[in-house]
Image 1: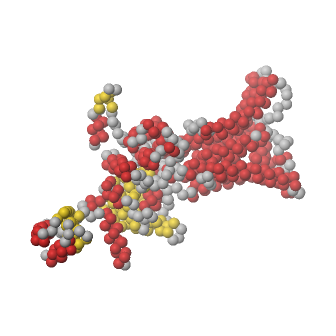
Image 2 (image 1 turned 90 degrees about the vertical axis):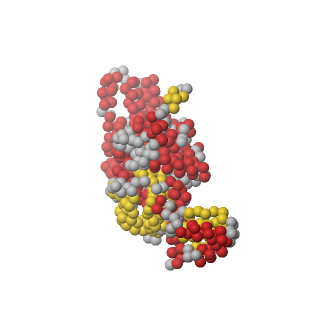
Image 3 (image 1 turned 60 degrees about the vertical axis):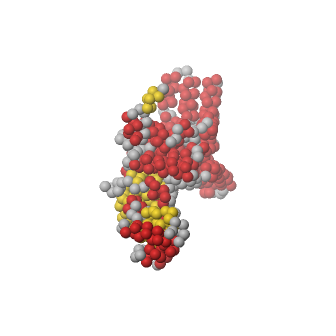
Length: 306
Length: 302
């Protein structure tokens, strides 16, 4: 079953701004990273999936339900954590989360019970009876997550869940997101402009840029698919690169590191022999992993070329 | 998986077994849109009176409600002490005489219902649940109308109670009063529906509470002043239709038309316009204002 499917989805604001440009994609369940620069169309896509925004043209389905006609049905099974602040300051976390649970259709008793559960899950204890206005950003972010999962959604849409958090808070939030997604099997879409976060928690990547789909693939397929060996030496990187090229390899020096294309096992022996031959001090030899950044860098390069 | 393992192997402690059940999935009923609507209506009605909120947010609604009730209670007490003394208040004129209190209640509490959700951007959360945008608008409108109905109906019931209790023949008096049921319920209902629509139409257009309160008070002050001046100073036809500018005059005319009982002091008597015109105008204003609220929530970004 397709979790989310869009067909030529387009959203224009006014006549000039195009937030989504004929976006067509299909994703299955999992923890899906939706990555793109600010203004790439991430929030717009999430809001259209929720039925908060109407697309200019095109269509989208969530769990096989049409966002244009089945908004209320979809929203019963979807939890949403907006990018911006969305909490009233004068209400306690308990009251607020349980109110939102009832908005999602839970009976009163179930809403109370689940509120206690999810607040414990996100790590709010005694403070949950105090007014939200006095909370730290980290605690507010936890309340936002709690209200998104209080009704046990089948799909969780998280828009920049680590917004405004310090590094420790960021780690905790990502950990929570990962646990919620994997242990409890809630399909999750995490929108973020930080590739590192996506890499850490997601199993599938959707990269969008200027409202267009850039990449859609399991994270593993391009984080682990390596083809480069990084050889770091104290000095003489340039000489090493020259000798390796002479030996028939594709290599280039990048500072103190020589990057060697490594389609098979053969280059390892050559690298070892050449370093020994030149008497260089080898400090590091590593299999370079593709990083998500490369995706955008490569795209940027073709843009420059064009 | 670790969660599930933890669930079946309780940790023993001095106070007994601690079961870490962790996150549970929910297989119970999901009541959907209608339940969400009624929850929001009741929560909003409670919010108007500051129930479940801090003591500070109860001061204004309860204070104004008390002021609404006080004249009826005093009139009742006088009637009990001196039976037969003419009372300044009747079912017909009570809300007319206390209209400033109703206006203040509306100006203070209508923004309470809608401004905060806009200012704190809670609307995105409401609209991302089972609720439709029109549901939100109607639940809030309904809650405001219900609150005004409570505030308007309560003193009518005090008047009723005082009249019945002051009479030597309780059952007979109760029977006499049964004929007034339409007035007792009708007047507050007319006021509640129209005022709620007007107040919410203004309040829903700004996230700033103070602006909304100011605008609602200004609406009643300005219309009353302009209507009054034109009635006195205008000539011919202008002075005859000028009272219609004031929403409270429209409401009094509507009440007069539907449940009867002309108030001598009301400008309705000064206007040379048939009573149904008051009713139709009041209905039009109410519907337009309610439509404005619905329109606002259909367009508002969330």
